[in-house]
Image (cartoon, rainbow, N blue to C red; front, side):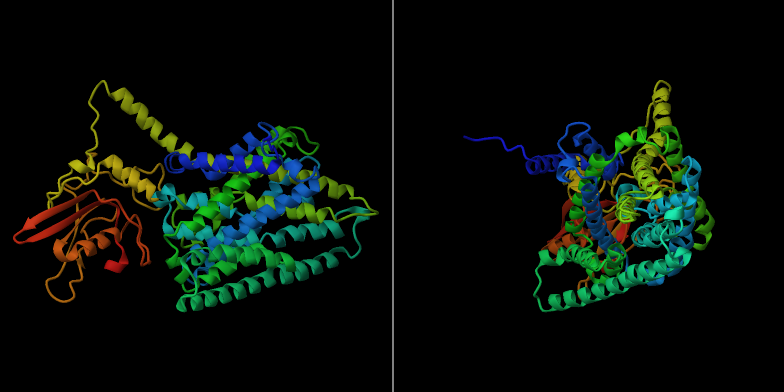
Length: 619
C-alpha cells in the first residue's frame, strides 16, 4: 500500500522548491517595481516555515537537537554562500581593479574598518548593561564587515542602474568583498586578549605578550597573508588553464560558464583543510582570475552565475529566518528589549556614516555628499556577521578552565548571540525597506496633489511611444507597448520608461518624452546609421547631438536584399542604459520595423527608443 513519507528531506525539498517557484513568478514585480530585496522576502519566508509557525523547516531536528551542531551547520552554510559570492564579486570587477584603486580601497579597508569596529564596539559597550569593553570589541568585530550578499542587492537592478554611478557600484562591490575576509584580525585581537588577560585569575598564562604573538603569527601571517598568496596562486593557475583549454577547444560552453563557481567550491574546501581565511582567498582568486578581463567579458551576459547565486541567497536567508533566536530578543539576561532596539538604531547610524563622511573627499568614487550618505548608510550587516558569530562561538567554546567555561566566556557567548542576530535582522529589514519606503515617500505627495487637482484641471497624459512621430521613418508598429514591455522583462531588461529619481546619486534626473517638460526637444532625437556605398559596407554610426540625459530615439536602415540580417544584428547590438566592452550584446525589443520601397531596392528600417548609445563594437 502507498504510504506517506513525511520525512524532513521531502518536506525541505517541497518547501524550498515551492517558495522559490512562487517567488520567481513575482520576482520582477517585487525587485524591480517594489524594490524589495530577496533577503527580506526569504527571511520572512523562513520565519513563516520555521518551528515558530508552519514547522516545515526544523533546524533542531537536522542538528539532532544540539546547539553546537546547529552552529556548525550555520557556519558551513555561510562559508559556502560567501565563498561563491566573493568569487563572483571578484569576477565582476574590471581588470586590475584592485591595483588601480588601491588608495580608495586602502582607506576603506584600513582606517575605515578600524573606525567601524571602534564605533560599533563603543555603542555596544554603552548600551549593554554591566558589559566590559573587551567583550564589546568581540561583538563589534562580528558586525564590522559589510555584507557582500546584501550589498549586491543595492548595486544591482533598476534602482542601481538609475541612481548609482558605475564607479560607485564597483567600489562598493570591492570593499564588501575584501572586508569580509579581513574581519579576522579585529575578531581575534579581542578574543586573544580575553583568553590571556580578560578573565581575571582564570586567564591563560602568557599575558598580553602571548596574545599579541598569537595575533601576529596565527591571524596575520597564517590566516591573512597565506590566504592572499593562496588566492592569487589559485586564481592565476585557473586563468592559465582555462585559457589553454579554450584555445585547444577542450572545454564546452556549460563547463566554461560554471568554472568560477567550481573555483569557489575548490577554494572553500582547500582553505578549510589548511585552516586559513577562505573568504579573502575567494575574493582575491576571483579578481586574479579575471585579471585580463577575458572571463568577465565572455560571461557578462550569462545568467547561470547570477541564477546559482540567487538560489544560494534565497536558501541562506530562509535558513536565517528559521534558526534565528527570536525568543531571546525578548527574554535574556543580557539586555532588555528597549535597549536592544535603541542599540540597533544607533549601530546603523554611527557604525559607518561618520567615517565615510570624513574620508569621502579622499575617495574619488564618492564625489558628492549625497553619495557619501548613500555609501555610509548602505553598509549592511548580514551573512558575514553570522559567519563571524559562528567562528567566535566555535573558538570561545574551546576556552575552558578545569573542564568548564569561565564566567566571562559564558557572558560573551550569550551576549554575542543576542546582539549579533538582532543587528543582522535590523539591517535586513531597514536596508531592505529603505528604497521602497523612500520611493513611496517621494511619490506620495505628487499622487495626493494630482488627486486633489483633478477637479480644477485635466491631467496631461504622457504620449505613448507608438504615437510619437519619427522624421526619418513611416514605420508601423511591430509590437504593442504591452508586448514590448513583456518581452523586455522576459529577457532580463527593465522598462524603458524613465521615472524621476526620489534622490539623486551623481546623475541628472531623467526626462520622459511627452510629459511637457520645459527643456523637452520638439521632436525625438535620432541616431541614424546607414551603410556606405564604397569600401567594405561597414555601417558608419552617427551619434545624436544632444545631452546624454535625454532620451535617444534611433533608426537603422539599409538595403534589405544585402543587409537585412546584418542590420538586425546591429540593432540587437544596441545596449541601452550603459556601455559594455563585450562582443555579445543582449537583445532589445524593437518598436518598429518597416519595409520601404525605394526604386528597385527594398529598404529595411528598424526603430528603437531608450537611453544610451551604440555599443563600442559599432563605433
